[in-house]
Length: 55
Image (cartoon, rainbow, N blue to C red):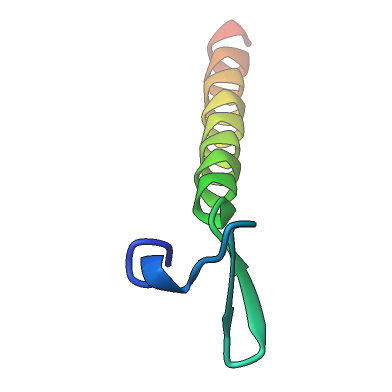
């Protein structure tokens, strides 16, 4: 979003498009949340494999 509309963002890092406020750091929060979800999923998979091999 930020790269497509760089000129739209003001000094506070906000962009108003069609009544919706976009922030310049929104993409960063998306990647952090995605990384956390994938790490959690990987941990669950590893734990389930270890549980099966111990039994």
